[in-house]
Amino acid sequence: MIRIVKVATALTAASLALAACGSPNDTESGSSGTSSGASGGSAVKVGMAYDVGGRGDQSFNDSAAKGLDEAKAQLGAQTKESVATAGEAESAREERLQQLVEAGYTNVVAVGFAYAPAVKKVAADNPEAKFALVDSTDAKAANIQNIVFSEQEGSYLAGVVAAKKSKTGNVGFVGGVQTDLIKKFEAGYVAGAKATNPNIKVQVKYLTQPPNFSGFADPAAGKTAAEGMLSAGADVVYHAAGGSGSGVFTAVKAKNAMAIGVDSDQAKTAQADVRDVVITSVVKRVDVGVLEFIKQVKDGNLKSGEAVFDLKSNGVELATTGGKIDDLKAELDKVKADIVSGKIVVPTKP
Image 1 (tube, one colour):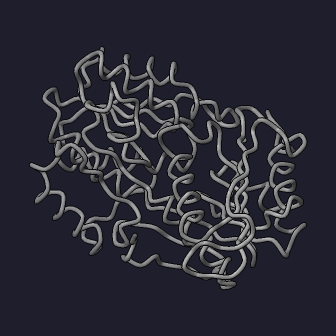
Image 2: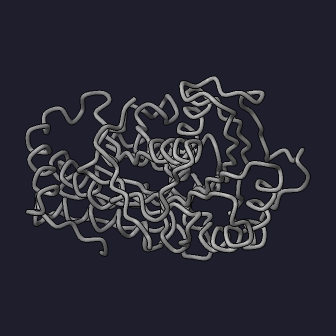
Image 3: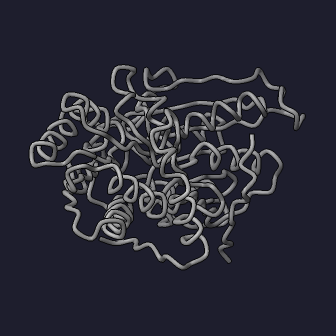
């Protein structure tokens, strides 16, 4: 039976296939064989298969990377990383995961819903290996944990912020790829904005449609989309577009407008020259999910099924870096409480 794992509030503390182990898209690091973390014992070996963009996307992948880095620091984990590229075949994702397992990294984190079919196959072929699939429940098995988030809840709060901060009554949403997952961001954002200002205009633009996932790694497309919204009157633009978000920030900066980031606290992770336009970010604690998975496999108690991160567990949250939404704290706290209590039911579809 698939177990639903609610994460506690104590949040302390895919075309390129892998060639040989020396592929320039692989990196390997960690302890030499003995854990340096508090848990003791032999080092756990973890393979990380990133979504398009990999480390340095300032967003989704970087949040996952943070969790991996914490596992190295806290648990002495040995790690190996590889990166997907836009437009790659399903076979490339399968080969990437299989090669990680064959190299001895039998605890594998697959970052992004595009890996679901590959995880399903490779997990079945390697029942002794353990897998964490981020952002998807489309692959389920006793050796798979599904790390998922209530993105719509955090996005609802972002919609409230956008409506309150907008001086034009016109805001924008840039989605990387028009999938059910990214539609959750849109749905929550639009709902929150309209609940705050029923007359607000919300412009929506997706960069690509499946199976083209390049919309998550195309800053130029993100910039063009945001420029169109700003020219049409928007003064706040929220993106859920991965690495393409850097282009959104560039466009917003040029117009002295406001931006809302995603996944990571982008007032800290975006390029230094655009950080000041980021008034808040909808943070998904992918790092916490990754670290918790690694702790579980190290301790031999993997909980398969859904590990759900939501507002109640602080698994999604609004970043407050820069103090630009401090004036909305009381209102945002009330809205959050109403979502957690069920008084506000946030839609998951536009």
